[in-house]
Image 1 (cartoon, rainbow, N blue to C red):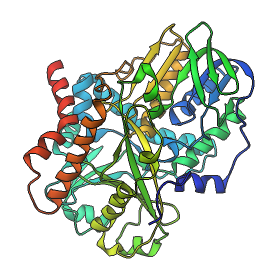
Image 2 (cartoon, helix red, strand yellow):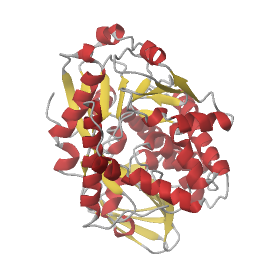
Image 3 (cartoon, rainbow, N blue to C red):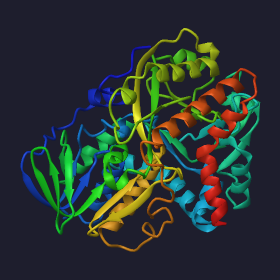
Amino acid sequence: MPDPGAARSFWLEEALQDDPGEPCPPLEANVVVDVCIVGGGFAGLWTAVRLSEREPGLRIALLEQDIVGGGASGRNGGFFSSSWWDLPALTGLFGEREGLRYALVLADSVAEAEEFCERNGIDCWFHLDGAMGVRAGSWQEGISRRSAIDLCARLGYGDRMIALSAAETRARADSPTFVGGAFIRDVAVLQPARLARGLRRLLLERGVRIFERTRVTAVDRSRPSVVRTDHGAVRADQVVLTHGAWAAGWRDFSRSFSVIVDYIVVTEPIPDKLEEIGWTSQIGIADGREWLYYLRPTDDGRIAIGGGTGGVVFGGRASGRVVTNDRRVAEVAACGLLRMFPQLEGTRFTHAWGGPIDQTPAFVPFYRTLEPGTIHAGLGYSGHGLSQTYVGGKILASTVLGAEDEWTSLAVNRPETMKAPPEPFRWPVVKVIASALERGDAREEAGKRRGVVNELLGSGPIGLRERYVTKRQ
């Protein structure tokens, strides 16, 4: 496996080779627009898409510090997923009616996004084949947890999440470690950087002004607002902040989320081995560890896998060595594939990279309007950004346009449900929890007890959310 740390993920390298797109030079002047979007990831792109659809004459500028797809939107696993596995928590946070409503909106977004890409000529390897949450060992539960399956059935959506036997899981991908799981219908896998670059092309065609390699240094809270950059400024009636994990360095969001780092590795093309293990569809897989592995095939016959452990970032530094250069964390992901599929021993890994996640304590995004009422933030997508930003773009577009509709009335459209601890306390707390999760998984995998300390510390994030839910009820 190569050392991680390359400037580009496999996804973005492939997307740029396929279509580099027309240049979007940095901002080097002062411009005036109706809406300025900070952040060229999926949340910003989808917001611009919805605004340009609903108000075609709107003057929109989008600022990205790297290139579109260079951040988390071009570094993730490429799962466009529903949240049926998390339905008990969603109904606990938002109430049964509103939690189910949000889950349905996320589920519906998957097929809707596929149709959107087809209609707009975006070839992003979109495959709506569903996903399996597997138990790769009798000790695992994870995404296939019974409480989620039972709640889906009780609420009339039992076809969305179906329990699988060991034989049924292995019929889809033959791992000797699979002892059961669940099939989730409303999940697709795609090439995320191709989607990001496709949305970039579409927005340029619609007249949106995109400025890449443009770092925002400040936002003046005035009417109109002024978004300042290194070499220019944008005066805008409305500003939308969608810069993800990088927002942790801004005072307004210093306690909104923790920044954790996931690493992904990609194999060489192995179509014959995929055939050998029976993984002939484009179904995605996630196992039931506390710090889960997620993996999926690609259109050119590779397997991409991430997870198993991760890095933790201090304060607002969503870049640097811990985000891109931690070989140990990347090796954990590679080893996870060989544990699950020992038949792949000897497979070469050609790419490895890391990416930051803006992880909220409640595991759901938040939306907040800052003074003087014209600066709107949508952040904290917590590792499930493909589907949640698709919905978030609709929420933010309606907010900008002052509409009170089905999107602004979603229960998730509210400020942070829970706050993260402040620094310098947050980093050691999250680091201890991350280590406990990894140690506990390793012990269970070796046939040992998880350990009382690992159990207590590792249950911290979920336990905190569960206590919040219990208190509300």
